[in-house]
Amino acid sequence: MKNKKGSAILTTPIIIAIGIMFVAGLIVIAVEIITPYIWYERLSSTCIKYVFVMEEYGYLTKHEATNLKSELVGYGFDEDKLKIKYTSSRVSYGNPIFLSAKYDYQIDFPLLETKSVPMEIVRNSVSKR
Image (tube, rainbow, N blue to C red; front, side):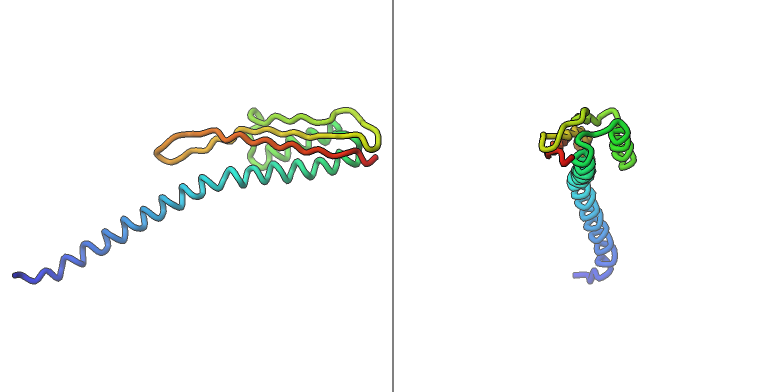
């Protein structure tokens, strides 16, 4: 038999390249799956911040509602897919207030499909004023 020591020089880099592409593909898919959770947390934390404002005033003022929407758009939320409902008139001390935000996040799986992930945040509290 002939000695074929030179074939390892060719196969080893090819196997390493295939392994790197496979791991890179898994990382991309993992990031695509985790991204909606990050967006949900951004939406949730922003809503909580504005609920504190609502507790102070007894409702969400037009100015603060505009600030809420612009802050979310600044985070990268699409204004057309964002639906916000809130207590828009002042309530007295101890009465309930609410803030609801809905958003449809589009997730793109490489080589598969585009899927819509609905996000809904509902925060309830009471007026402290």
